[in-house]
Length: 304
Image 1 (cartoon, rainbow, N blue to C red):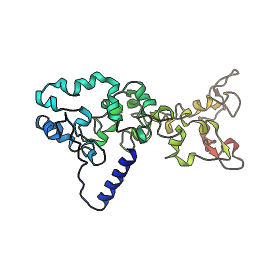
Image 2 (cartoon, helix red, strand yellow; image 1 turned 90 degrees about the vertical axis):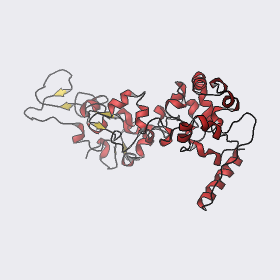
Image 3 (spheres, helix red, strand yellow; image 1 turned 135 degrees about the horizontal axis):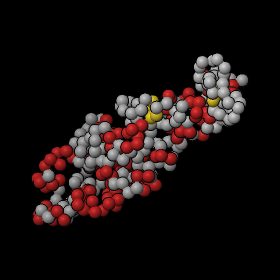
Image 4 (cartoon, helix red, strand yellow; image 1 turned 30 degrees about the vertical axis):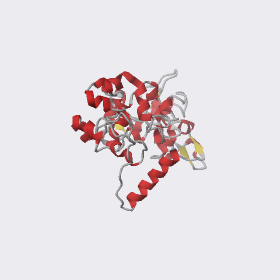
């Protein structure tokens, strides 16, 4: 059956390329089905919106396609009696809860949806219509025109983070959530749409990938050890101010682990050490500029 569907899709694509007009695969005449025209007689506005979506065109490649009744079930009895309990309507769908997803997954269980059952959103019993509006014509049938507004229904912390001074250009519209995440499930943490978090970062930041002659272990392990991807008040999306971040791993006594500052001389352990009359603060990156890795023969300290 899958091969037959694939052949029909390939044939349809070929005919479109040749400029040949297509006709939908005829729905099999089965008892109990009222037909799309009957549905449109009462649900005119919904039918009009639905006609502009990809779902309305699914008959070109889906065998046994029944228009509205593909999802709502046979509607002949409902059409004759106008009884809302005689068809799978909004109330029936809401009572199904997460089981509602099985209707969508009858067709959408390939590609980026293949890991839905093992994904975070599935584990939290989200329903497809929490994010998608099936009858609307918005991009990917989302409930809002802007994808991030759908995500922010739950991810309010991220909504705050992208307003901070250093952030990925999400609020500017240059990238959006699905550029990094696959909301339908992945094998990587945080639903990252790549094998690892670093592999996703390297898609844009290829110069940080290496391999380097001298590698900085945290940078190789996980970019988010040092960076907060959505937004922060520290430069370069760092989780903390540069010198404090380095101090999480490097001792605060005796260079190269201490931060330099004036007027803080003590004999005991402290993150601040005196430099006499030098009236400047120095950051680690002033000297260790190649912090992601170095290919210089003398670059084991990641110096410039």
